[in-house]
Image 1 (cartoon, rainbow, N blue to C red):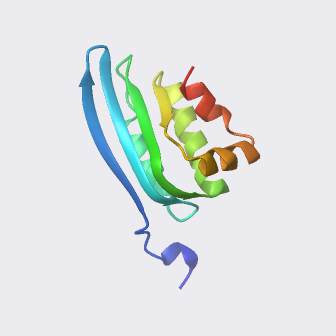
Image 2 (image 1 turned 135 degrees about the vertical axis):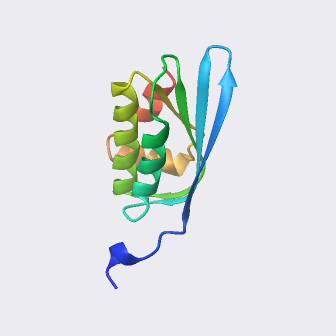
Length: 117
């Protein structure tokens, strides 16, 4: 069995849409491990909700993220870039200190800082 053939059941992405006065907030609650085998699940969910209207915010709730590797961090960066290109603000909410450390070591912690600007 190739690694890519292993079923990915250790990452869950729940999508919740919340109406707000100034637009729509879409929350992706990510729980589990975000790595090379599961990053496509996050990216697919993000692509489904990454459509304007203006003023929309996509929040990735990372408090349930238990593992992040370089591939997962690249996936978060790709989500951030897709949101930026669509004129949508992405917010990385409540990442653990460990997840922030991984993002910092990989030189991409700016996606968390930019999300709070």
